[in-house]
Image 1: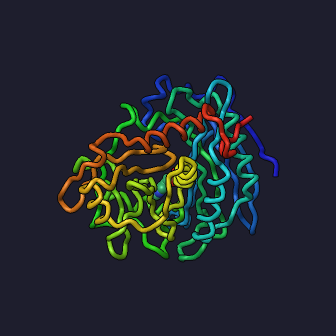
Image 2: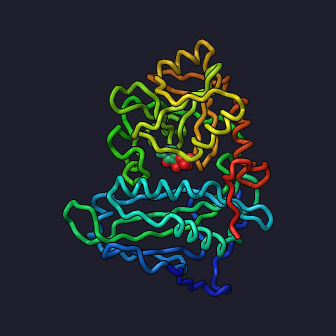
Image 3: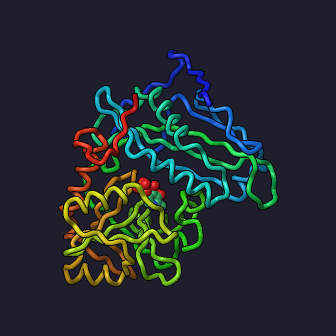
Length: 355
Ligand SMILES: Cc1ncc(COP(=O)(O)O)c(C=O)c1O
């Protein structure tokens, strides 16, 4: 398929943010977007057009039954070079989400091409300051107008772009996390491993209550026993014990994070044994108290690595690593951000340059 491109005349384009370091996440969008439609069993009409509102029938299935999925990835710019980080993994995961939500898969090579083409058109929007990037949001929604609960037969796939500032605006500092023993995010057999819109709605109330108590994220426990740690906000979670880096296994309730996978590779290459196993909250609390837990951190596209300095659980706050940034978290953060910016030699073949 050929992408039909119609660009905004240069004098009508939006001005770029003057202070990219302080842009609130996801509030500014670039001049263009990619769209492609699905009907009668196939994807068609791929286009790049000026950024525009969507016209949706009020009965569109996504609005009623949540048949919607998305991805989150970033483009990084250094000088004339623009890089994507393992973008094929995001497109693979989009298709995995599509299968779980009974939505049509996309041609992965074609969607990668569309992402690169759109990013290339918008390359001047990509800020250059350390920690800044262009956030890429591929999205698929069910557009068929129908009130019966059933998989739709018509869909829209689109990609929008948003320049974003660094996650850590005031330096790389640990975050404070609230362990929820009241709400859960997802359950095995449900849709926790898909990047689908309802999972994020399900997380709002618990996160709001945690925020009101001064915690920036919720650490979610498993939905069956409320015993094992699963994910932290929109991040996967790692616990560094003395001789082991442990992370929750991909058992269907958590999102298979691309940063998680990258951290597992990097840590193993550093000679650190990594285990994917159930980690109980009791084991974590005891480990914090007896010193066997050295670090806890989250991983995800937004923060890359977020050290956790405090855990609040059942009415009590526990300080992790004396509330400082752990050595391993700092090392992984530097390596990953260095790779993404094209500054650290990429022996993994993870970094893809956009022409
Ligand atoms: C629920 C959830 N878990 C984990 C992650 C981390 O995934 P990734 O490393 O691919 O960004 C994300 C972010 O995309 C997320 O939304």
